[in-house]
Amino acid sequence: MSVIDVERFREALVDERRRVEAAIENIHTDHPGSIRDETGEDAVYDIHLAATATETYDRELDYTLEENSEHVLAEIDAALKRIEEGTYGVCTNCAQPIPEERLEALPWATLCIDCQRERERR
Ligand SMILES: [Zn+2]
Image (cartoon, rainbow, N blue to C red; front, top):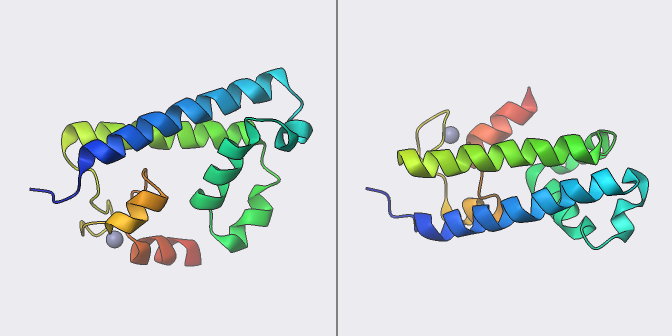
């Protein structure tokens, strides 16, 4: 039914999951304040940028990286579950297909861009 190459995104998600897990490990063995200078930093930082809108970015920096990483991990797991269920790539709010380029930027996106913007406005 879907025209999206789900396998490609599954691979991206599994890949990303591994990176986030490594990043969480890093946090546990390192001081959160110095993580940006470490090798695992890129993973956390990239995800953070992709997952949050610019206006919420500064505020979200106050949250611990661990919290963010574990949140992303849960999002990835949920996305993998949606792949299993065949609902991947469909907006959970309006049931419209999520554009592939959005999924490329954020493979675990649950909302289309319109719904995401709508939610952030509140
Ligand atoms: Zn939507």
